[in-house]
Image (cartoon, rainbow, N blue to C red; front, side):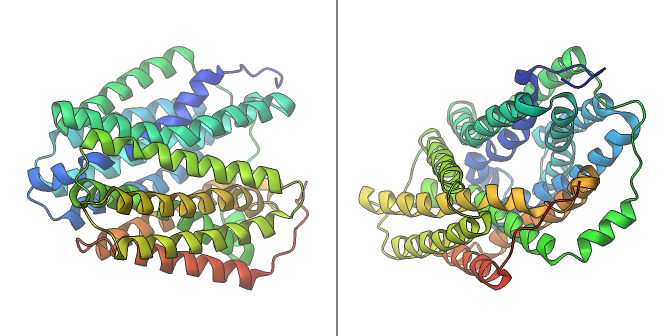
Length: 398
């Protein structure tokens, strides 16, 4: 433990970094019911994913910077309060436009759980203890997206779609109490001031940062575009009940974990750049398999649905293989300004996530082909970026 800094419990940190993930995916199973209840098109309710990540992007930057000025604990409490207001707004929404605004506010607040929690962890732990904590949290993050659709699907099936928003309101109240009682302040009394403009200028001129920002943004964009489109594929075309659909989140979690574990195993033999390239190639293969499965799909055939799920597993495993390498390489040259660089970089790639998920809402046309064609195009772009970069490892600054 670092001197004069209290160490928060690992359970608290895991909960705080995981709740934004659950908030993103718990919403997925209720999209068809929302479209019907609000008399909105499927494209409009899918747009609530794009607006969510726009709010998340701006929140990551805002809370990251604000935590330096007012402290980690106040930034976390204010962020969760804003998140609660957004959840209440979602529950009270009577139109899709009010829902879009509420989702923006919800995401803006939820982002504090991502950026401030990572800062707290790095400040309060070091050495093997910090590495062990990140390992536990990474494992939890792999499963938290699976919990969202499972909870959302069964709540929708048993009590209706508004019950999902009540769950989120209850979660925000719990988090406020938990953080107020348990989260210590970890910011050092005299923090070093870093010029935002100088760091931003360094990042803007760095082609590696642009490349990895694109790769991280597109990989996450594909993942959450799946959550936006999948309800219409599996609940409307294949006619799965919301609760049954929720179990598909486990497939996503297993695919992501498989890719991450493979990345860790390959890291002993290959450079991270090679592993990222391999992941991009597998993603292209998975998207092509998904396109073929969707083209031949029969709504009454379990085999057709199984082939679609298998193709998705390959695609998402490729993404899981790419992400660890991208994250480790992206800011390798910015160890001297990691906090500020991370805030700016997070803003950039979450804007790309927002753009990609918004794109999914625009290309949705009620057929099974929209998602695989869109994913294949995005995967091909990522593969071209990986091939054209011909990256060499860089030595991080002290």
